[in-house]
Length: 468
Image (cartoon, rainbow, N blue to C red; front, side, top):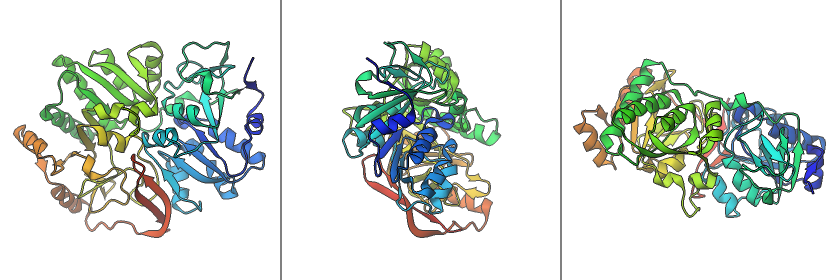
């Protein structure tokens, strides 16, 4: 018995894919993914229209989607993150229906509870056998964890595994088991694993970024949370990674044994695990090839599903046990609301990912950002888009001072006792205005091009069309 079929074109036919259906993809190959484009090209050639794509994230490599949107092949997009190549065109209004943005926890929650229905899931698998047992840990296109594809595999009406490394049955160290898979397609190449290293995944050398990183670690120390059992997540930005490096040195020096580190995993997190700073890595997504190697070889480096990572409707999830998370921002306002969906001109170039999930779960959620980027203030009176509500953000760390949410008087007292440069968010705003002068935020149109769905399923904000 075998589930192997000859081509993506045959998969489209045998799954019964037709006009108006919803298909899904995961993004673990990130900017090296070939599968989404291959499938949508084949759908277009088959003459199928009005397709909705539910992808955990859309990256720059998926720019060909723009033509498929304009031609009517794709009429709906749902994702947790969207890169600028597609995002700018969405902001210009090329799609009739608003994009639906979810969080990394909200997406599997909606899929598992049936709120978000998938007709056919296409799963890029770096290794699979002919019955569909598959993994991302090995193969020429190895990308590590397949955590965001678990819910798609379990709940989609039809599941197609697409692989470029077909191995004899049974593949024993599988991530997704054959019980969820309908068909397997073998192709020459599903992607370029070098593309998973997209964006900034190196420690900053910028003195401003290093100063921010030092302040962030001093905040963690002053909070009282840095002790045995400490749990932590940080992003892959330069300042965030610098903070992780400083934190590692302190934990090694003081023999602090943390419990787990998680999120999008980089080699810096692997170094912390190997140095004994943490007992485990909970990995829903690898951000570089060192992380891929680690998840393949180290039993303490564990693959987890998107649901286990952050779903608010799972019986429990890892974000709820976080002590500290370090996050970025394109904007933060007087109420500590954070925007990571749009740039300063209002164009879509990001998305929540796990931003609002981790902020909601962590005992201390920190934003690290320079006060001004390219003469655009980070602190504003009102963000263009609320990605993460201010009620879940505790601290803003800039090179010009540290602002603490007034609801966290406990942290204000601890930071002042540690002689950290605590200021109000209003003072940071004033400092930013002194630097940029008479800055005027962009004006946006009335038409809604995207809806931002918070992790609990409510629409927290709407993104409006850019006027050019």
